[in-house]
Image (cartoon, rainbow, N blue to C red):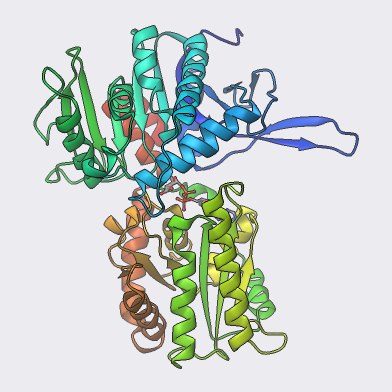
Amino acid sequence: MALSGDNDFVVVANRLPVDLTTDADGARTWTPSPGGLVAALSPVLERFSGCWVGWPGVADTAPEPFRTESGVLLHPVELTATDYELFYEGFSNATLWPLYHDLIVTPVYDREWWDAYRDVNERFAAAVAEVAAEGATVWVQDYQLQLVPGILRQTRPDLTIGFFLHIPFPSADLFRQLPWREETVRGLLGADLIGFHLESNVANFLDLVRKVAGPGGSHIGQPDSLIVEGTPATRRVGARITAADGRSVGVGAFPISIDMDSLGESDPATVDKLRGEIGDPETVLLGVDRLDYTKGILQRLLAFEELLEAGALDPAEVVLVQVATPSRERIAHYQHARSQVEEAVGRINGRFAAIGRPVVHYLHRSLPKQTLHHYYALADVMLVTPFKDGMNLVAKEYVACHGDGSGSLVLSEFAGAAAELDRAHLCNPFDLESLKRAVVNAVRGLEHDPQTLHERMLAMHEQVATHDVRLWARSFLRCLGTLDDASVDESRA
Ligand code: ADQ
């Protein structure tokens, strides 16, 4: 089996789904690490002799391309420590991330970072061009690689190219701050299909194209001309743009979801044991996030503190568990967010905990998926309160773990998930009173109106169960023209 040049389906993402382990003798082993995206794309990758191109996650080192047990080729792109600093921490996460999340912190516009971004995008595109067969389909993932579609369009016009953005797309007025806005939009328009989570992201992008394309630029077709599977026919979720070179570019909303099959059953004995370990409280509140300033962790803690202070929540009866995955730890805004969160946790425990019984349990680490699912099952109220979030899979994972109708979800209006999970206790995380109201309603509802909460959770569970990540992948690839009806049926199996 040749290792390159014969792949009919190529996924390219910043990260390759692999983990590096080093044993006691210093020997290194790269092992595939399946996540939601892998699960969603596996059926297609396997069927089309697929290849995944990405950075293996460790600077200045990369394994040789290798195949997973199911035959998917993993093709590493090496990044140096400088690439990591300028392209990843710099342009991707200190320029694009805050800009696309509506300026929660101020983006930094640095020409050296942009040069590195363009350079790394060229290297990813070159790697794709090397492994993709004639006429292959390439699916480019996320904000780190927005120039890849445009580069590939020039170097490999035979390819069918899709692009999906996992984070929000901001309003045109914000995006226009970006000094390299024309290049970025041109990069995206190299694709045949551009996918966003939400209709509002699509509207922002179309508005932007109108504003930056200029005379002779792109023409926007009818808003309802793109049919997206899993979306009511009455909804207008996309459009076709005629690009400057005459190609038709589809733009659509494809809300991502979770892999229902990976959830497994939670074990009631383990969940009971966990509850015992945290002091057997009457009510468990839970937050699970990457430690990112967009996720609103501090605001959630402040709301909790004010509710304890006002006596609306009783520290003898309620416990908040906050699990925060370390993230982008060398970036100043992330360090600041972490110290604010940790200061608040210390202060709240100092004020309201009893000896041996913290009122906030804070874990700054990643947990195994199965353990996380036990925490979801344990939580009476899940707090998902980002200032801005493309989708937020944690909200969907929690709902998926409550197929029995138990539990309650407090959800920010600014999480993409709120469009589908509108039976949650929605709140505005910028408004502490709104957040507090939602928490109190969720906690009191468990006691005073369990039947209504039960119905709300079941309705949300139905939505997640019938719109999982496989539907997301299928509907995108169908719009891109990669999947015909026969292969759609196959990937459903
Ligand atoms: P993220 O910003 O990373 O994703 P999210 O969608 O919530 O946010 O996904 C986080 C994932 O990490 C979840 O699957 C969750 O289970 C896992 N996770 C979080 N904390 C964890 C912990 N402590 N231990 C183990 N696992 C943990 C980006 C966008 C989102 C969008 C996704 C997918 O920012 O808006 O929903 O991509 O498109």
